[in-house]
Length: 243
Image 1 (tube, rainbow, N blue to C red):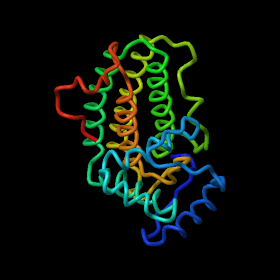
Image 2 (cartoon, rainbow, N blue to C red):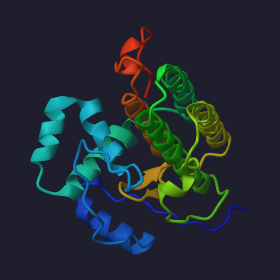
Image 3 (cartoon, rainbow, N blue to C red):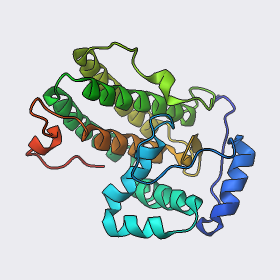
Image 4 (cartoon, helix red, strand yellow):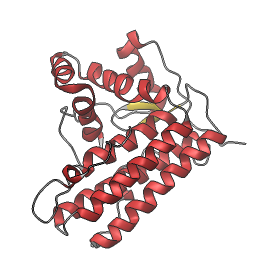
């Protein structure tokens, strides 16, 4: 038997404001959370900024400009979740998403190996690892493996002082665990409309969570720099990682 966990059902897309209010009542969201500016990463907001950064990177500059023109921050969030995360993820199986995570992990490993040993690069890797571990805990809720706890990502970061070598190893181990969770979801899938809260983006399906983690790590790892200061992802000659 799965433990009792929050089960949230989606309302029609046109009821964005009502949906947000209803979700806040059911999931005890904290009102008045600090707004996130699209395209900016806020390390203290559980990766919310990076998730919104996906918008411009994925749907292009024109769509990003259109988003910024929208009047409601809630509308922007709804658009990002629906069009950048949930719709693409919903067209994929858990097997597909797991394979995408594996391919993305290959690129992550390569970027980490080419990254110079600098405080900035170590911070990027620690951030990626922390967010991915935090997301794994939310996916475990969808699997019925743990109760929902609205915690923050910083508690999942590697301990301070981790070396570059240790972070590289942790990055590979962390991604391997995410891939394993995708496999578990394939064999024990939740209902299609079962969602688990993201602190900043609101309710995400299990598929949405998997896509979010893959996108987040890919985008953040593009900040890594090599010994000469060149972005390590620019050295890649393979096909871009699938999302």
